Each structure stands twice: as structure tokens, then as C-alpha cells.
Image (cartoon, rainbow, N blue to C red; front, side, top):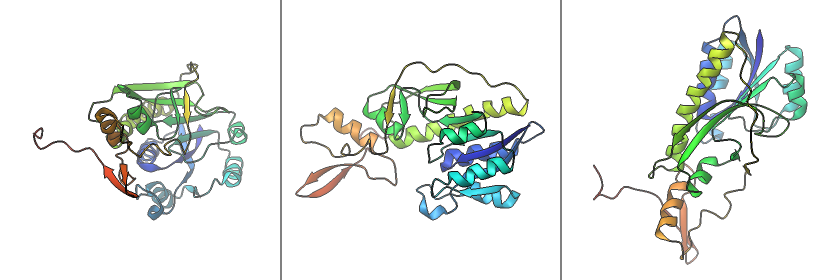
Length: 258
């Protein structure tokens, strides 16, 4: 039996956790979860994983800090042999992966290896991509570089914003995660396909300085930036005039409205 520790948060993590919890059978069991306890401190205003753990008496570890010592202790004490990561806010160390003999998987809401790391929705639109993707992969010592399990690709529309692309990615990610549950709930071996290419890693500060519009930006670049930085409740793209920010966000013209 797979004895699982689930690491995750955000709407995608909460939806996948609910599916994983409801599908438990003789082949797998959720033993522990690592997520946010306080919903007031996060942009999605949710803590459903914490609530479910309280309801079902599942071991819970708060992820407001990295907390690897506690994760290590629980894995050893509870004989956990499998890690599932969905929207986890911290890089999982190689030491933790070794404890489960690298039997660890991650759902990444972007194409790999092209879009590793953070803010991939924003960067995909800034880069003028016409398609986007989901990658479910094995975890390795190299972040976002483990062998692929499942992938899913879909188109980016000309009017997609970072937020609408994110919402699509969550829905597609849940679909991919269902495939994973189908495999482990029936005891099937998960696929492995080596990841090809180097791609690009986007750091946590990779958007720094990109939100500000320049007066020499073309109309096309202004439109692209307005879409790339529309993701409530975060700051939109903006011009700076006399030291003040004037925000720009996409809105369909009344002449084009249906």
C-alpha cells in the first residue's frame, strides 16, 4: 500500500487533495498533509486541506515555514513511502526525497522543461506563447527535471490573461491528477519518460521591473503586458506619470461586446 504525505495548497492543491482523499482504497491512504493553516494569510483565502485533516484526523503540518524537520519526523515515524506535491510552496530537499526512495511526484501547472519555477502564466503571455501545458512528473534532486508521467497541452487565446490562463490550468491540472489517481487506486505502475531539453527556470523575483509600461512600448506590447499582469488580487501593469502609478488592465471595448 502507498502511504502518502500530501504537500500542497492553493485552489489546485485543495481540489486535488479532495479527489485523492475521496478515492482512497486498499492501494493507497493519505497519512499526512502539509499545507496552510491560516486562510487569511493567503491570496486564495482558503485552508480546505487543513479543515479536511481536522475532520478526518489526518496528521497536519503547517507550511508557513519550510518545516522539513517535522516532515522528516512524520515520514519516518509513520512509515510513509510516497510523496504527492501539488502547489507546494517550498522546494523539497533531496534528503526528504531519499527517505521515500524518490517515490515522489509533482503536478506542475506549466510545460516542462520550458517553464520551470514561478509565474509561468505571466511569462507565457509575455513570451507570446500560443499554447500552454501541464506536466505531472517524478521529483528528483534537480527541481522540475524529473521524468514525465503525464502531460496535457492546450491553446492560449488572444484574449487570455494570466488569471484566465491560471483558471484553465487548474481545470486541466485536475483532469491530469485524476489520471494519476486512476493508476494508484488500481495498483498500476506509473509511467516514466525522460524529460528532454534544458528549458528555463523563472525565479521568485523574475517579474521584478516588468510590470512598468514604457512610453516607447508598442500598442501590441502594452496589450500583452496588460494581459500578462492581470491576476487579481495582484498589481496590474502600469505607467508611471509624475511619480504616480496609473494601472492598465484588459477590458473588452463596448464596441466589441456581445
